Length: 368
Image 1 (tube, rainbow, N blue to C red):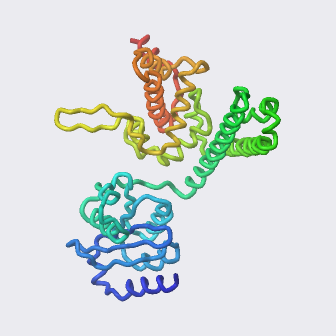
Image 2: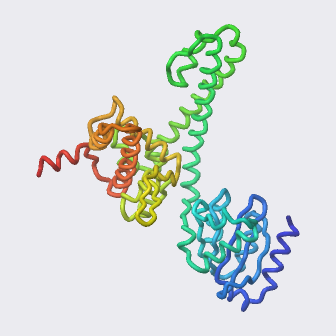
């Protein structure tokens, strides 16, 4: 590793300042251990291209020597800390949306060197072609990881519970219908004697996971109250708790990034994808772009709003009206529609910190 650092460092320092001034764009293809970078001049000619270890010291030694440059890199595991590091050196950093760059992902001559060159050329030509994204701050990222860690435990607990339910059925038994956390008390009586040895460790695991999930819930509640007091405005909606409100705010990171709240639905992938050509307009499903975890939380809140315990509100009436139209997957379409409107409403409440009125449209009609 030391030889790679010194060689890349030496090549960078050997270049005269006049040559570095010609560099207008740099592309970095980030790898887990090593990254390829390519520098282009104003004519699109390659000035230099090297390999550098994907470590903080190596990146610092290389890019802290340069004056302000436009640097493009793709979203990935290392892109958050690399982008923050390069920005601290004064560079203009563009983090390209890797899902949009089919020019790279579907290239038949794909390798690290070509990827770095492509990123550099796109940064030199038109930055909009990169579909740049903005990474959240390091503090917000650490808080978001708390929320996602809880989701990992919930997923594991659900899989263990589903395994238990499937394991007893070949023996002619069926576990009682209850939440995964309640299986610890209700399942032992329904487990046949032949499976006691195999199943009891799994019940102990569910108990341990439930305790840890409860600890995460308390931490998230404290975090929402102490660090994100504005989340109280989002929690006015029945069906939106601290988890959903906090995950929504931390994923969006900055409420001002959207000029219109209606854009949030499309950003979260809750609007239909488009594939229009000439007079042909193909009806497609939702795009499912953006963060899948927040989208899943919004769908869960929408299911509660449309369920038997949901309060009467504009969101519920909107969803029930769609479901009443009938047809294939009417309830599913209604749930997605409510989730989309819920995302828009949450962003609006976040920006305005207004008092939530459940039946706002009814009040407007009465006033009219």
